[in-house]
Length: 433
Image (cartoon, rainbow, N blue to C red):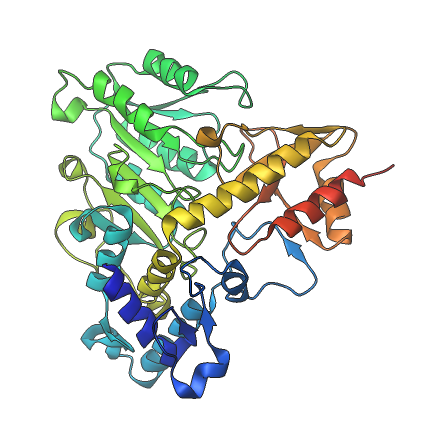
């Protein structure tokens, strides 16, 4: 979507959402509710961005990456579309519309394709990362005796999807770790360990862009190069495919997900992209699409990746409002968003390292970290840390996966501020017996 079209969409939504971008006058009746996301000099107005989210007054919320609060334009677009569905349910099939024109699956997929650097026909629509991973592993053509190679730190959703599919196909699942110590690992260690683990029978390398269990940002482009090298001389049915759970990297890192070198990229869009809850995507490389078969009937399309989309009726007002979330993100600017997240995350990690008894379990290196910071406090359980923070109106979360040690987590999104990070650090430093 071009900058002109993004501005057209956001300006048109002023009538329905109260959002205004620089250079687009608000609808007079809603001018008092309007927000401007950029200052006259073009710089992002982070205070205005923050006001788009319904954060709880008096609280510092550093767990917004779990499910994003709907920003104002997304929330009002959902309400706008819901009114049309309520008034005429058949509008779902013959045309819902946003203020600037009709919407539907084609528009949703085109907006996402523009954002991730791919093409609309390469995108399937799902309700979440977990559903998308199930579609991928269950739909892959697999021969008995082949294996899925995953990392120990992958989310339970990917590990379970692989196990369930392997049991059906007579395949196996093998888990490995690509580092000895996550806090000191390097790109070289990760890639060398992976190269040593891939076997002739490895059909999938499954990995995670940003691990919710450790905060590690995996070097996907370098991992993809290792997989390409392993594929030299292999027949298509024996190719090793790189499947990436990208949910905590999408819209948190300034990179085109479709150009990282992966064969499949799966992500919910209701986290860092601020998309409507219950929305997600699966991007499949055109060189890999013939290796997949649909699991469900699709209401999105019968060709290309669209055929992999699970069919059925759903919250269309949420799905069809996705272009508004994408347009908002593009108007703020992906580089600016990623830089803000990185700045706040680095502030959190460096601040935690200065607190006595705190152990940070996320790399400090910017190329190996993103918006999630994991830590523990010696002498305190994770729940005691979280409860202490909550007592002081600071909301933290915990990674609680059976396959990895549990950590307390700080998530730094664009709705947060440096002062909030500092407040959280102050509260954590105040832990006393």
